[in-house]
Length: 286
Image (cartoon, rainbow, N blue to C red; front, side, top):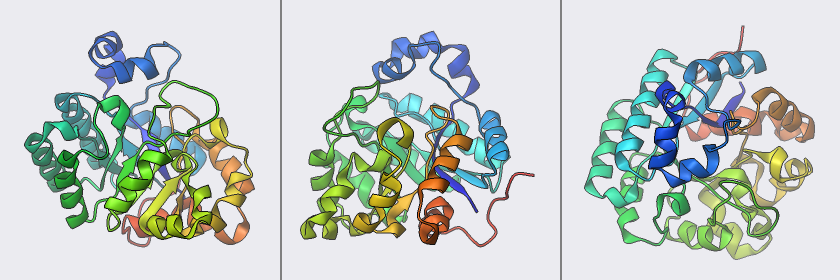
């Protein structure tokens, strides 16, 4: 079973009224000011999954700076998961600075079927990973056994829209502080797995995962062979970053680059275990 652990969908009205959202959120404007920047609905994602032979996908919205916009996106994601049962795994976004309002939204979304949090973007949402206001959210997520997906970026290399500043130097102390929480670091954790050659870093990463989203824009395909021995093959989750990248070519790239003995785990088995999916969950494309 193939599971894409990093896809984005947004309500159709966001595309229809893109200019309004661009004015309202600077992070959204950074990524989507260009008319060529793709936005996708649940229906478009499902069509892409069917074409690529993907059974299920983690669906993320956008890391809005306003809690009200987070809630608008969450509602669409949760409704989409109901309309496509067994195919879409809803992760919801919060604005940690919203305090009690964010906690209430978390509880509401859990009751509606949310399976995780994310993708949070500290730099775009203007909160600090060391801010104590984040602790109640993390504590409740741990109690609920909900993984958190965090945007991560590389401290070196080329610049690109949305890269941000959430590098391993910021992620590492956060992981130290929340050792018991399952945390997924997007985009290979900004390179953090390579520091797992240090014993103390490897110990800190024991409950952390990385996804492979946007690999073809960031790394040589050799990363699929080099990273597993460092962080452990059970800690790697395949993700495409759809609709930024098309699922089928990203899946082919990963399948070709992964060592055969860990291919099934990275492409779906690890995600199924982390998200506690029952055997046979989802379905392949017809």
